[in-house]
Image (tube, one colour):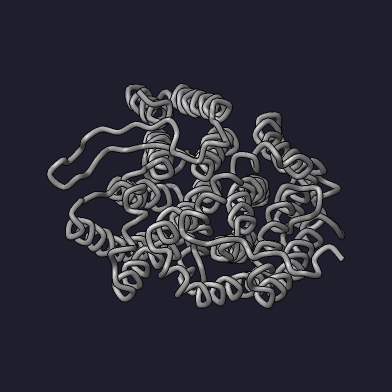
Length: 505
């Protein structure tokens, strides 16, 4: 049995264990869920140490026949891109459980159901990043909607039912477009004499497609991924879902699940449809830059803390998509590293933001004045999370943003220069709420707010450690990402722009 399959099954086994516990034994349920995700995280770290970075082929492969009559296999495997995102996911999940220890109580359903949904979702996340069969990827891509829908609708706040339905409708619409494209890929591969859903085999399918066919199939995949990411103008479901979801659900949604969209752009759009990728790149670059600037302006205007974080993510995903479609190895590496770093910086913001909201009973930014005097540890954690979000040098997000901009500039200098404005705007949308929430006179009602307790400090410490450690020493992850990124670019027929004659003079 492949280590990746074992990794994917561990949370599912944990879900069965949680299901076997009595509903009234709330503490045991939480402990079992936490233990299952911790075991998954440690095994994920172990797998990462066994990964051979220089080998660009899929590793830890598991392949079994599933529906032979349609050439569908249960196939799993990872390259450097998938492994890094799986690592991010399995490390964040136990921290989400620890940080939101009490947020499952008071929901529409029992505490047990909440943790079963979290554990099943973790299994699906690992599976969707590791799937090397297109049909299996599609099934998991759609199935993920179900636990997230119930997490938002059952354990959220405010307009949670409306937000959950909106999330589901957007996801289903994108999934229908992808299903049509998946069927098209199968029909074309059958017509070419070898029906297949295997990603490696499909990478050569563009040679037998007309440009028109390739363009339509590309759009079917890309729109589905752009909704999931989300990229402007398909982003409108995210602020509502982030606002209504519990902090833990929002962390998984913004920090982990959104990466499925940008990962899919690399794994399927560029790999299977390289010619269409060239055709649509100018349009996607425009959408990416617009997303960067538009998301930043929305964040500057935000008055609600959770909506602010959602709007910053729209801007950040503009950077990620820009790096992906820069069609350079630096841009691809930066985009993948950006996905990893965004997961942790967003988790830090939502963790601390969730604690602030729970203590104050409000998510309005103006209600958090003077926290630095009252809750200094929480204030410092919010400050560090904010600095990571604006890509301060010395923190991990700076490295990824720098790689994206450098990789883009070598091919699309105007887009890179405009995108740089997003860095200036990031300083505004982070520093303004930091100043309002942490400094100045203490807002009435904040005088007796408690600072972080031991559990909360333990939950946030690994997140901050990752942000700082990979800011100063990103090589361990980049050594895994770089060969895979270069392989994607080369396999799709792209190459990095040659240095100019004046370079280095």
